Amino acid sequence: MFESLTGRLTKIFSKLKARGKLSERDIKDGLREIRLALLEADVNYLIVKNFIKEIERRALGEAVQKSLTPGQQIVKIVNEQLISLMKSDAPEMAFPKNKSTKLMIVGLQGSGKTTACAKLALHYKKQNFSPLLVAADIYRPAAIKQLETLGKSIEVPVYSEDITNVSKIAKDSFNFAEKNQHNLIIFDTAGRLHIDNKMMTEIEDLSRIIKPDEILYIADSMTGQDAVNSAKEFDSRLNLTGIILTKLDGDARGGAALSIRAVTEKPIRFVSIGEKLNEFEIFHPDRMASRILGMGDVLTFIEKAEAAFDKKEVEKLERKLRKNLFTLEDFLIQIRQMQKMGSLDDILKMMPGTNSKLMKNIKVDESDIKHIEAIILSMTKKEREHPEIINGSRRQRIAKGSGTSLQKVNQLLKQFDLMKKMMKGMSKGKFKFANQFLQI
Image 1 (tube, one colour):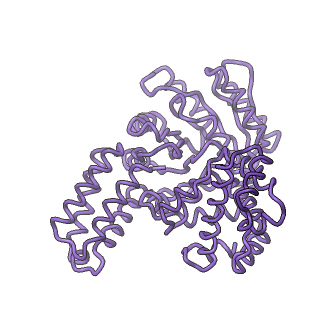
Image 2 (tube, one colour; image 1 turned 45 degrees about the horizontal axis):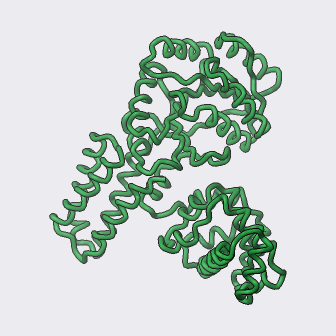
Image 3 (cartoon, helix red, strand yellow; image 1 turned 180 degrees about the horizontal axis):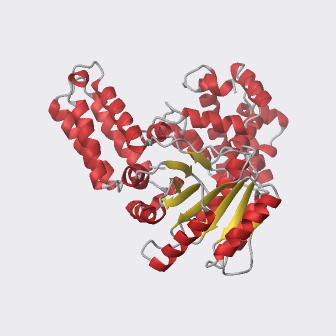
């Protein structure tokens, strides 16, 4: 996510940090480049103007110009301003379990509402809520079927009726939820354009019937300012309580993420970072700012690792790393477990201080996992434990046995060697998150 913006900012900061001292001219030139980077990332013009103005006010002070590390000070200021831009004073969503809570999900067509409903249900199910999904989209032919399929995959019931009266569906769902002791009801409403007055009036009427505790707007982050402007219009009719940013994994620019909170004055509650139903996170402004600046995201990494990794397996891995006994079987196990945490590329990007060139070489395509497994399983036990013995003839045999190519085998062995060096570095404490990760 935000590859384009992160890349631009990284280059700007590298130039600033390369200078021993920063003159006023140096700072203003750097801020001009940051402004252009933000505008090209489709961040709202007024937001960029105020953002740069505040950074300039702070950056031209004596604390920066007289600092021994002025470039680092600029990065610190930008990081703090990014956090301020995305932060909200609204309290976190906390629901009682002894009574029914109602969430109404609204937004444009194609923004990812139905999938977001399922992700929300799974998120709260993990917190021991008993969610119920309600199919309140009576217009899109496949909407009900999609919600039922998603609900089945996470073992969450879906309430639906074969009628076109959405108000009746909502009222009947209350009785169903009470009868079956569901304490969280999530309404998947039909997508609508904010300029369609008839449809907007319908959603207002539905809101009065449901009386939701939260009205969450689904914003497709890839649409940039369109998502921001639409959210503002929905808020004028419904009084939104929060935003869920979807498709963040495909957003190379970041305009919506950096603009929507400031423009709508509504908190970003969650972000969807992939197609899988577990690729869904609570939004933390400080962590997002860190990702945007290419500084990793330690806390999210730790949380994902806690959910995906078995504590005994981690302790076993730590002992192997310390003795330099990391094998190809361990490599396969780690890749399988990291898959549970989400996209491998995104997980690796959360690691601070990781060399960018190393990251490119260690990149593992999701579709290659089966090839990796086939290659490793085609090796002898001795080859898995001591890959250094795998010479040319052995590689040919492994390629043939796995149904892959010699190039694939060579690529895997290279990736394993890089991963081993990286993991060894973690065990020696080269990465700041290492101790936390190994002590989960």
